[in-house]
Length: 430
Image 1 (cartoon, helix red, strand yellow):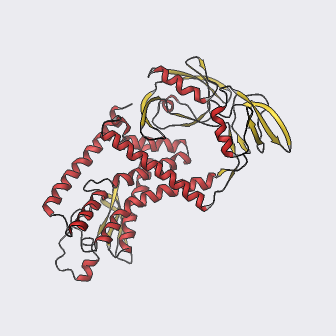
Image 2 (cartoon, helix red, strand yellow):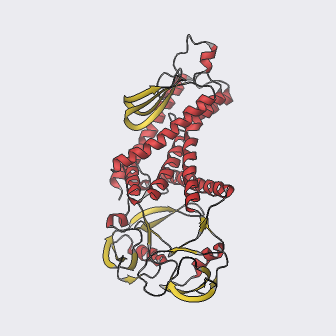
Image 3 (cartoon, helix red, strand yellow):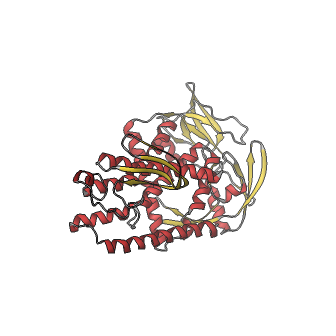
C-alpha cells in the first residue's frame, strides 16, 4: 500500500508539473506532440483535436511532454529542423522565441508551486480561522474527571491572564504555569464563571510524525502522556527537556488512551530542526507534536486573508527546504536530513494511514519540494535549461552544442549523486 500511495501521489505531482509545461507551451504557440504520464511501454493513449497524443505508460516514475521538433522526450537536444517551414519552426521548442521557451520551461516547477499553494489554501478555507473573541468550539477528551469547558464558552481569562482577543489567547500560553489544571474565567450563557479545568496545553499527542520513533512505538493522535522515564509530565512542553536529557538513550512513556494506561518505549533520533530566525538546531526527537485541549470556534477567511496566509506558508516551506538543501551540501547538517525515494514513499504511506489531512499536507510539501528541485541550476533539470536561456539572452547566441553535451553529462552525474545521497539516507539513517 505504501508503494501504491506513493505512486498515486507522485503521479498527481508529475501530471501537474508536465501540464504546466504543456499548457504554457500551447499558449505561447509551441505544439506538444506527446503528453506522457510514465515511461516505457504505452498502456493507453488517445490523440486530441490539436494533434497531441495523451498517454499512460507502464513505468509510473516520471513523465514528459515531447514538443514538436524535439529529438527525444527530454527536450535536452533539438532535432534537425531541416525541411520545416518558417511557420512550422515557430511551433517547435527550438524555433520558438526565447521568451516562449523560457516561460514554457519555468511553467513546470511553478505549476507544482501552485498545486502546493492551492492545497494549503483549501485547508485554510476548510478548517477556517479562529473567531474574535475566543470561543470554545470543541473540547478533546482527556483523563480529567472534573467540571470542564463546554462548546460555546467564551474565554475571558486563563490563570488570571485576560484573553479579550484570539491574539491575546495565543500569547497567554507562554505565561501559563506548568500544572495539569488552571483556573479558567469564562462567559457561559451570559453568566461569568471561574472553573478549574485542564491546562490548554496538556501532554496530548497531536500528530505522530511519519518515519519516527513514536510512530514505530504505536502512539496515536489523542494519547495523553502521563510520565516519561518515571518523571510526571503535566504539560507537553515539559517533554522535550526530558527527551533532550536522555541524549539518545531509550525513553519510556506512560500513556493514557481512552481510559487504559500502558507504556511505550522509544529511542530518540537526532534531527536538524529549522529555527524561526533561520538556520538549524540539532535535537533529539521522538516525532510527536502536541494537540491543544480545545479548538476555538472558526470563521471562513476572506479572499485576501486566504491568499496572503497561504502564500506565506508556501514561502516558508520553500525557503526552509532550500536552506536545508544548502546546509546539507555544505556539510552544516547531516545528509540524513535528505530523503530519497524510499523515505518519501514511507512518509506518504504513513501520512495516508494517518488520514486525508496529513496526506494532503505531505502532498503539498512534496509538490513544493519537487518544484524547487527542478529549479536548481543543474543541466537536464528545468533550472539548467533556464540558465542556458539566460546565457543565450546575454550572449545573443545559443550555447555551443559540444559544451552543452558536456554540461548535460555533468548535470546527469550531479543528479545521480543527489539521488544516491537520498537513497543512502533511506537505507542507513534511522
